[in-house]
Image (cartoon, rainbow, N blue to C red; front, side):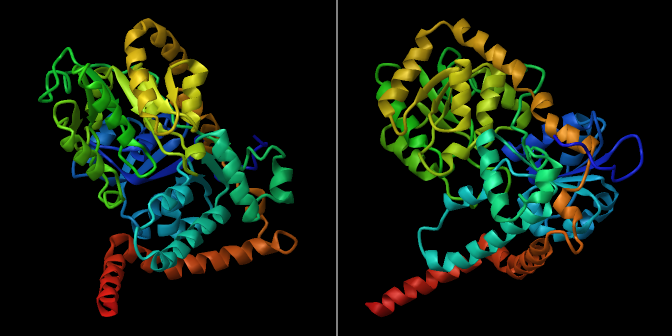
Length: 473
């Protein structure tokens, strides 16, 4: 990374504000877990404040108890007043594209801004397109693109989850004009502009504190073989290949039990996203496998997640071949490694390369039911020590402490990107103009985007579409 600019404030320890756009509390998904662990690590090096969307009234107290040394506060989405005091005191603010869009006041503070881009939103949004009224959806899409372009212009440092994602980000920033003589001169490697802060592993291994699946879930005996689908059932994932493989194996291997313990996301704002729940549930029911070989839960409390991992014998991570695939970094895969669970994964993403690199399981082709079934049997036949030694080696190199190093360094030495400092004649003339235009467009479309995401306009357009069809008849 390039040498640091002069510090933004005096004092022996920098002040960092980390804003989570996802809920934190008893039940957390990938983004919330990421910010929980980044807070835990960053608090060793900076005076850290974690701003959260509390899951419930107990969430703040629980987080304060679990994160000693971190100042935990609640904020409200889109409400500048709820963050203003903490933000104005910070040397560094770490935020997501969601937050940059919803609270644009953050952009104009003296603090250095870190944009956490580990989740490529543009590609993720493409996988959740509505089935009807795509032309009407394009207005919402324009609003989202304006918000994304705004975030390309406003941050001093961008972090992402993999080297693949880093090249993606460099391309986005090139289009936005952020790769220019000023940023290149500041750091010819451009690591000072975009670097990798992947999803990591806790330094301590998980501990089993109580039985939560085997011998507890009706239909799963203590001696059964549990196959875990640990994440959600998002459109870019392929749970149907998993259930079809179980249907193929069940007659001869009735001890195999496939569990989906996380089918209802803990964040209400995410629950409206399209998922595969209905298709998978219907298939399991039609095949007579529901609650016999295939089981569904709502969402596991984070305190019990280590128990679920340690009671699992195999973990699955299967996906479709889409533009999302090469950019994806599956956070649940890292947790499987943390718990020492052998993994079967579809090829194509960065985390499947970890499996190959460390020999942590089996990599299969897209939609290959037979290969998944055979891989399950192969893992069960192989000695457990074969995977445990490899998993132990991987755990030593993938900790949060190690993956967060570029972010730790930046928070200890915050600085403005060179072109963000050049707001004067002779700087980058297109920069301030584009920033003003993008900010105005994002503000104009913000209310429309909120309405779309709440579903009101989509439902209205669907009603209009049905009305037009009846008139045409």
